[in-house]
Image 1 (cartoon, one colour):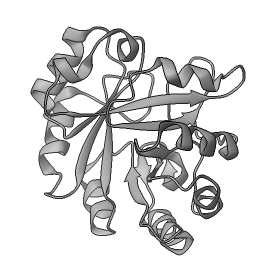
Image 2 (tube, one colour; image 1 turned 180 degrees about the vertical axis):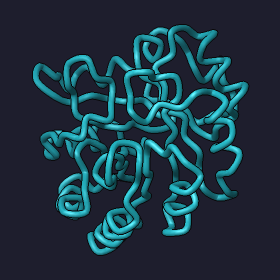
Image 3 (tube, one colour; image 1 turned 135 degrees about the vertical axis):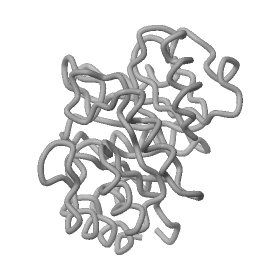
Image 4 (spheres, rainbow, N blue to C red; image 1 turned 30 degrees about the vertical axis):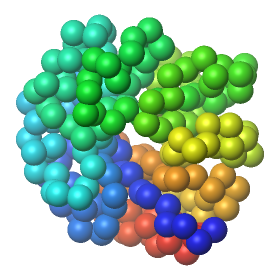
Length: 215
C-alpha cells in the first residue's frame, strides 16, 4: 500500500487524553455517549465539553446506541459532532441522512459466528462502514479480532465507500491487519489503553508508528 491510512482513537474520556492523541497526530477521536454499560461512557454534558475541545481538522465522532430517533436527535443537536456512529435497530429502520443533513454517518458491521456477508447488502451504508468483531450482548468495542480476510472481502464489496477496520487492534497487530484488509482507516480503543477509558501515550505512539510503517 502507498495510501495513508486514517487513524481514529475511540473511547476518549478526558481532556488530557484528547490533547495527547491529537498531539500525536490522529485523524479522528471517538466519544461514547449514553451507553451506560461501557466503561468509556460519557454523559451528554461531558461529551459537549470534549467535542468542543476537539481542534479544527480532527473529526469528532459520537458513538451511541440510541433508544429512539428522538434520543439520537437530542445527542446530535446538543453535542454537535462531525460524525455519528450509530448502533442498534435505528440504523436499518430510518433514513438517517434525511433526518441529519450535514452529519457524516458511519454504518457499523459486526463480524462473528453466524455472520453472512449478504447482510451487508441490507444495510444503508451512508458515508462509511466500520467492521468490528461481534460478541453477544455487545454492539462494539469488543477488543477482539476477527477474520481479516473476510473484512477484506467486505471492503471490496462496499467499495468505493470507505471501510474502517476495528476490533482488537493493537500496536503489535495493526500492521498485519492493514496489509490484509487495506482499509481506509483503523479504529482503536482498548488496544492503546493502560486501563479501560485511559489511553496510554506510549501505546498510542507505537500504534501510529505501526500504521505508518505498514503503508
